[in-house]
Length: 445
Ligand SMILES: Cc1cc2nc3c(=O)[nH]c(=O)nc-3n(C[C@H](O)[C@H](O)[C@H](O)COP(=O)(O)OP(=O)(O)OC[C@H]3O[C@@H](n4cnc5c(N)ncnc54)[C@H](O)[C@@H]3O)c2cc1C
Image (cartoon, rainbow, N blue to C red; front, side, top):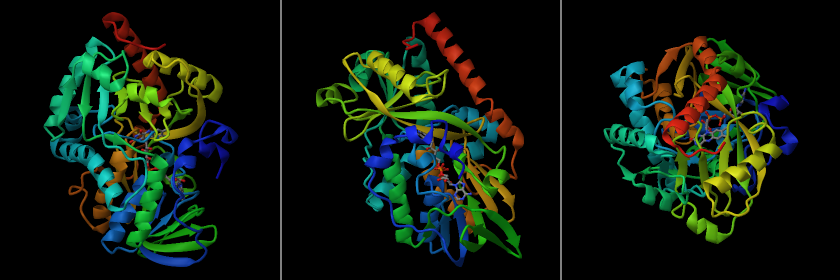
């Protein structure tokens, strides 16, 4: 696999905290023979693994091919926030875009995503630092309180009970004086993403799926009524194939999905462990924290007292580990002034598979050949929940019956629009800056 697939930080500078702190993954060797199955899944991230669990659980013979190792892609590199709401869209905007029925199906899927995650963790006893203490969104200025109120009422229509917090409660729960109020969603939570991916892989094997690592798909051909997937040392003949390759697609998956989604670079960072007194004053109830900036500030704890955060590129920050670490140290002390010293020392790179509306999309590429990408910043809950819907589709459910939008082929315009993400991000930052200047929002710049 080309080096640039790792992301934008040089490989020798990557130090993804999850890869070290997660329990080892299951044994899964490369494929070295010719085999047959009902469904071949390409990609060992949440989408592929959740689908494999569901198919295998129903007795459908399935195989997962992973080019590198389980969780190599975004599923092993994310921040681990499990958020029951959408990122940049909302249930009402979705209705305008997809029509009421499909939009509401998709919203229900999103809202139930955290249930799927935590029930998989419980059922398969996945050890992944899982905490379900809520998702805390704090208003970074008085002008964002209305937005929280509106979101609360929209999502309540879908059974997501949330609590609005006044400034004092939001500051107590977050540990940050930057909060003007908040919205606490008890259904949310967080986890160690690599440990979760490895646990899903174990669960898939336990249910009967066959998993192969270090097995990139090199060629994909239709032969009669089946698909033949060629890998370096073997071949899989399958009735159907699913590409679950996110923003890390290589080989034929990359060519077939060109334009379906746009890979957006993002950097993850973990601090050195902080003293336990600080842990008692910052997110003392261990929620997952996000603020209301369009380029949001996010934090969560690890079990060994590190703060984890992510950052999009802006100049050298988010691109180069050293300046990013210094910038994050300053921002973290600004956010939590009770911290006197914090050191960020563990950088890693990542890619988000972004669609214009940050929604997952199923592509029917040819008869019996499917793909599902576009989870953007919500893959923990959404890709986990999508596995159930994808399994139904592969079993024969119609596009209308499943909760994910399905389209024939790839809409290249969509990928081109998503490639405007850096422009949109700059625009969003400018809007944030203006609104903060006008309305007194708290911002670190
Ligand atoms: C830094 C970062 C922070 C994030 N934070 C969050 C968060 O806090 N919460 C959240 O919900 N989401 C978050 N996300 C998004 C989330 O991680 C993704 O949406 C999700 O993991 C996508 O899962 P996936 O299975 O679709 O793709 P991936 O996990 O990317 O898996 C795709 C896999 O396909 C494999 N592959 C590609 N081509 C081939 C081939 N030809 N043959 C075989 N295998 C192949 C790759 O090696 C890869 O392992 C974040 C992402 C990043 C990068």
